Amino acid sequence: MDISIFFKPLDPSRFDIYEDQKTVLGHAVKKFLDEKNFPDLTGCQIALIGCEEDRGSVMNDGCAKAPDIIREKFYQLKKAKHPYHVVDLGNIRLGESLKDTYAALSSIMTELMKDGILPVILGGSQDLTYPQYLAYQQLEETVNIVSVDAKFDLGSTEQEIRSSTYLGKIILHEPNFLFNFSNIGYQTYFVGNDQVELMDKLFFDAYRLGHVRKDLEEVEPIVRNADILSFDMTSIRQSDAPGNGNSSPNGFYGEEACQIIRYAGLSDKLTSLGFYEANPLFDNHDQTSHLIAQMIWYFIDGYYNRKNDMPVSNKAGFVKYRVALKKSEHEIIFYKSEKSNRWWMEVPFPNTKVKYHRHHLVPCSYKDYETACRDEMPERWWQAFQKIS
Image (cartoon, rainbow, N blue to C red; front, side):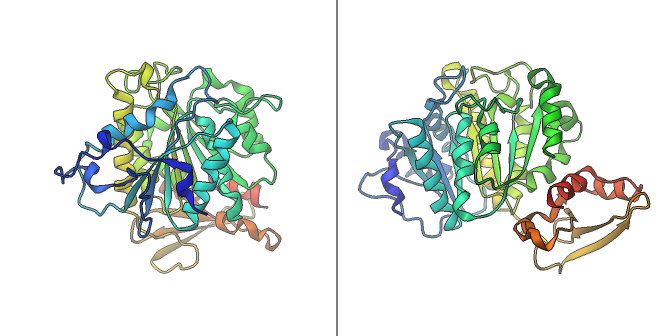
């Protein structure tokens, strides 16, 4: 498929001005600037995709204007020492309907991922997570989604898809290829006990903002387990990211958001990323767009520091630990990477469920190993076991 037909080029007067600024990202990133000269994707590893779509937004009209302002801030940042095999494909031509835009975004992402290119979506509203998910359907793999969000965005079955209902649509989509969903940073006064209980019944993971902020390092294994990361800027406190119609006083600090995104970059498993709900109409001196630009900088830095040490087929370079739980019949096998000191747990799966082979190694932390050594079942292991068995 020729994906160039889906894109419109960037404005050269805004983005072709870095020829003499060799230390900034505007010089390092290949860009689609000429309608007749679509970038050659050979050797590219990361692709920036602008999606100026907000027809699915809820109380945040205007977030479609964010992609180009994010770019302006991003291209002013300094390069690091690693290489930059990054391409900016410009902005997607919006479809006549919202569903047309969804179809275009999914098709583009599928083609890029088939070629080993990681799409980074600059939204736009968070309902774009739905086509981000649909892009994996043709790859025929079950996937994990991690959403950094103050809410769950479940909605109800009769509601049409919007930024506040996209997760419910993903759960109900057929064929269903969602293995696990994790929410990082929900705030209880936006969610309610009924939705928390529903997440538990589905064996999904939900982590309260206060719980996460006590020990941010425990976010790393959650993000390391993701194929898809969707970042809603409303999860960041208003003082750090005012550019959103639904921002609130509480949330992550900007530095914490950058750390979470760097963890995502370091993950060998993650294959797509979306930044959503930034709205320049509510912003203060483009502060939110500037923060996203820095988050992308951290993501790329993490990407080029990946360790490629997932213990999927080859266990060489890993220390193996066995912990037998006296209170149950289960023995939990842990693997610790000698290269990165990261941990995984092995979850057995029946031969009849081969489709779950990608999920039988669950990223974890040393704390999970300590939990097992105290003869307690690590919650991450148990939830994965419930879904696989």
